[in-house]
Length: 341
Length: 79
Image 1 (cartoon, chains in turn brown, cyan):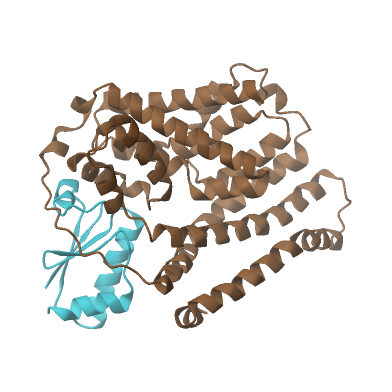
Image 2: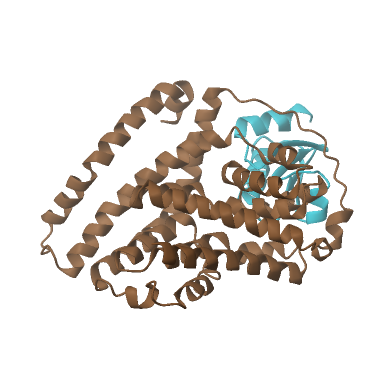
């Protein structure tokens, strides 16, 4: 397999794509067949929970593989270095918009948040613009977007991207306006790195496809346990929680549901793949869209581990401002959606 | 030859360090491997992603784990 990919990347990709489509079409009949082979009675809680599980796990895995592959290729066209060059010297508002958009496509891992932060600030990217990037990058996660697309349709996916962008742009802009440069740890400004330009190697299209396959290997291997747990919980809710049960807890008539969802979501940490099946099940049982989106954004976008990492470069007041501004943005988005839908 | 792996504890950084130590041992290369976890030290190299791989003061790769044969070429290259 590895050899095939290395020698004939393009034809292997085409064949795998055809296989992918065939599998995807066959999923529902296959899942039903598996369930009918068991002694389970259709309509019972356990049966429906299992059916959900047997169908959703391969479906989400398939979608994930395809998306991670595509994004793996797209990412080879972007690098943090290039993004930094693009953002340097941009004015506040324009910079915030650009940073948020680039946050979506630039390769980013929260363990690199610190070098990235320092590198941006040092290169003269305004603080507010840097924050826009740091907010958008984890929150508008390609995995989240495509899973939303697969499970709920393009409207929800688009909704998520646009609200995520809105929050990243405004939160970064607000932080930029607050003039909080003094709350960045002093040593950050004292670093003078020799930004010796690394020679940039432009990869061939074959290399880019390789990167796509590598991304699949790396990310799917990391994410699948989260997916299993997420879909397991989702299946439990699907099979056992009565219809509309969530309406009384997370419905739009419950005014406190949005802030509470955010409060619960912030300390929770999961990647997008694990949270979305839960979101799926919550929505199905009558939770409102605004509340659910707020919960999801809080879990993915504001994570405790990342905040702790950021503490190394930010003084406490700025940490609170950062979390506060983003959380407020998420809460506002939640309310707006509850009113509109 | 001196190799420095820059990274403050991400999974990839550990993997890269192990990979290099393993390769050095397997091919009996006289290489001194050092893991740099101090952020200020890391930032001196101006990298934006970890892990960073520095061989004799030159940044060779950033944010990824290079393939074994690529690593070997570098490791054998200057020693």
